[in-house]
Image (spheres, rainbow, N blue to C red):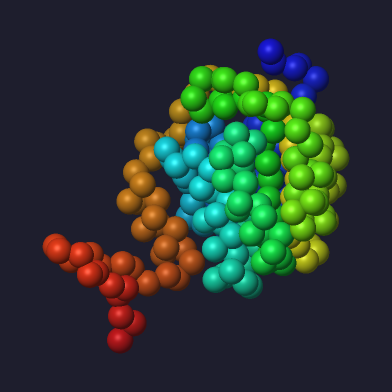
Amino acid sequence: MVNPQLPSRKAYFEVLAAQLPSEALVVTCLGNSSYLWAVVNDRSKNFYFEDAMGLALPFALGLAAVQPDRRVVVVEGDGGLLMHMGALASVGAVAPQNLTIILIQNGVHAASGGQPLTNKELDFAKLAQSLGVAQAQTVDNTDEFGGILRRALKRPGPEFIAASVEVDLQVVRPPEPFNPVMTKVRFSRAIGAPRYIPTTFGGGGMESGD
């Protein structure tokens, strides 16, 4: 059931868009998080996941490690996080100072039809703290979210913000249909990553800067 007292995903995203540093990299999980973020703030420094549940956080962790001078913000869902909980444990162990995690906490698997989580009462912020992410909080309104996010984007992380949202099962239409190859190419160019050149029988490699 939709709780009318909780903010929408879009309301949180509008706050994020207003506070996001221009050089920050944003990784979004599959479903409405990617589609809606493209509607609110499409930019070349966004990496949109599609049909890869639970892999936004592992990807963002690696990205934070290789781009230490940029703030990396990842938007993951509570269902996706439960699928790959080891990624959050890795964040606690590695402790990347430039990583901010925003968890969309709606208590359901929205991308697959709204099936409830096995434990909707799980306290993800306390779970993150137990895994070594000390700066972890839960919010249920955009004012509090804005204040915590403002501090999180300015101080060393990692940061974990569990944002309680209303359930939104209606699929959002992005500005343009996602093309995974173009998403990768556009993002790679934005961060100055070399291009991968495939070969017919495997054994491809990265483009040389020579």
